[in-house]
Amino acid sequence: MGRNIIKAGTKIPKHIAIIMDGNGRWAKKRFMPRGYGHKMGMERMIGLLERAFDLGVSYVTVYALSTENLSRPQEELNGLYDLIRTYFDKYMGKICERGVGLRVIGDTSLLPEDVQTILKNSEEKTAKYQDKCVNVALCYGARAEIVRAVNTAVQQGEKVTEEGFSSLLYTAGQPDPDLLIRTGKEIRLSNFLLWQCAYAEMYFSKKMFPEFSDKNLDEAIVWYSSRTRRFGKTDEQL
Ligand code: FPP
Image 1 (cartoon, helix red, strand yellow):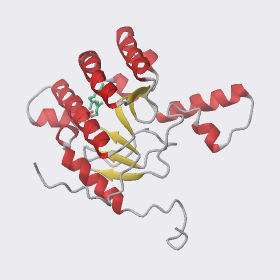
Image 2 (cartoon, rainbow, N blue to C red):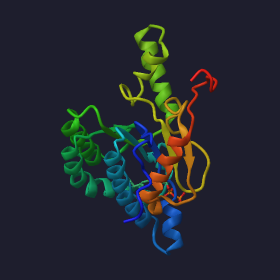
Image 3 (cartoon, helix red, strand yellow):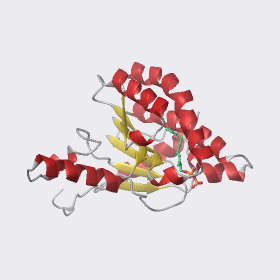
């Protein structure tokens, strides 16, 4: 066990969003197939969720598959769907014990039907847990999410406020992410939570996702805790 760097005064973000990038490169470096990278990524994701909830984080949103990722080779997509088939039920028991809800965000109608059923069952089973939630972004794109919300607003025929608009997004009812973490060396948002991350602190790690350890998560949180969030105000106004 290493030294615990989270101290009593460390500010814990209420909502963390994670772009889990670098599974493929991590696997390639080890002469392993990309699917192995995703499997290790899935295990790391579960580990990080456990750590985040242990620390008192209430919401975690993970980017598992973007709309753009759907054009990847079918074999790779099937591997990801198989991971959902294998891990979801198993992991669900654990998150139910913790009182954590599961919400899938994105256009799930693009997924195989049996996978849709697994996800729907998981959502239903955990719907009673409102205060803590894992959002899994699957077939997700932020622009598509925003356009979908605009169309709903147009249908409703009334002008919207910022709060009203937020309530038309997949993340309705949840606080916006305070901290966004991206692994895998790239410094971009890749169409993830564009509306919700307006004021998120952004942490970019050079680690590939399967090697992003619990300690690395703690380091990101300690960094977050040191940030002064001004939300457009001056230091004196805070
Ligand atoms: C992007 O990195 C990662 C993905 C497209 C998949 C992320 C999936 C997991 C972490 C596993 C959890 C899965 C589910 C379905 C909940 P990349 O593999 O494209 O990396 P690269 O840029 O190195 O090729």
